[in-house]
Structure formats: C-alpha cells, structure tokens
Amino acid sequence: NAGVTQTPKFQVLKTGQSMTLQCAQDMNHEYMSWYRQDPGMGLRLIHYSVGAGITDQGEVPNGYNVSRSTTEDFPLRLLSAAPSQTSVYFCASGSTRGQGVDGYTFGSGTRLTVV
Amino acid sequence: GIQVEQSPPDLILQEGANSTLRCNFSDSVNNLQWFHQNPWGQLINLFYIPSGTKQNGRLSATTVATERYSLLYISSSQTTDSGVYFCAVHDFGNEKLTFGTGTRLTIIP
Image 1 (cartoon, chains in turn blue, cyan):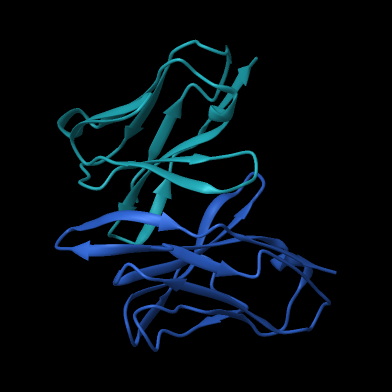
Image 2 (cartoon, helix red, strand yellow):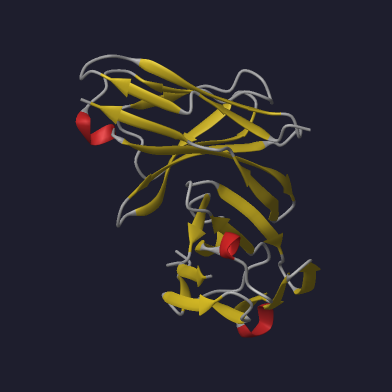
C-alpha cells in the first residue's frame, strides 16, 4: 500500500515553461487536492476534486489546471511557470463519508523552483 | 470559515521530557486531524480524531468536540519528534483543510 505518490520530488523550471506534477493514490479515495506551502503563508488550497470527472478551484487556482479522469490520478499542470509559483506542492487524498472526510493522507511533496 | 489556533507556538525540550500541545477551533467539527511536518518537510498523518482518545506508541490525542479543543500528548520525547505539529479540520464551507498555526517542537539531546 503506497498511499499517495507524488513525482517529481524536485524540479527547476525556467519562466514560461510548462510542466505537470503527478499525484496518484491507491486507497480508492474520492477526495483529492493540491496545496502549496510557502513560508509565512501556511498551506493554501489550489484545486480539489470530490470524484472522477469533478474538479473545482481552491484559494489560489490561477496559473494551474487539473483534471481527474480516474479515481487514482490527479495531475497538476503549470501552464506557463512564473517565479511566484516557486513553492513546495503537496497532493492529499481522503475518503468522503457523509459529513466527514475520513482523514487526509499527504504525498511527500514536490519542491519547485522557477527561475 | 473555521478558525484553528494552536499553543504554544514554540516548545524546546530535553530528550525524555513529556509535552502537551493544544488545538482550539471556532466551530463544531467532526474531522479533526493531527499532523507532524518533519525537518525534511514531509507531512505525516498522526491521528484522525473527531472525538475521544487515541494512542499510538508514545503519542496520544484527545478531542473534546463539544468544548472545541484537542490535545496531543508526546511522552518520552526523542530528537526525531522535532518538527512542526499541525492540527487541521476539513471546512466543508470552502472544501479545504484548514490548518492551525502550528507548534514548532525542538528536542535537544
């Protein structure tokens, strides 16, 4: 049981380049999300999905796209990287049962630097 | 949205000491979690504890939902316990995990 797998762990991009951060979970969780963590700002929600085919914006969605074609995968795309997107990115998943998201599991993170 | 506050913000202890971290939240919740972010940045899920008490080795947690607080106990601290401890709740109003302010724990050998 691998949990939540994120790749890559580290990435350096030039301004204007695009890339996809991969996230996969093997726990059959319905809920998946992407956060970014910046010093002094805490973790902020970028996008989330409550099931395959359903995505929605979080607090800081600009510059990012997501899709959810399967329950297992939730990739995050940076369309045209900017230095302001330098951050640590975390993918998280959780089950949804009635009112409760039954615990989140986080991936190990991707440290992205945009130069 | 839900407000989540933690205390103390910083804690420095000798190896072997015990500690209690507190989490207060502003609204009734049924999905409180505790996480440990280690010095390498990984976010480790410690407890999912909407109410009651759970124990896992040297760590235990108690949530009193009716009084809107949760406590994390760490006994016989080890240097590997260092890092930042967060409590968090899922806010269904905006579908995000709202994190507390964190407690930075430093264990000195």
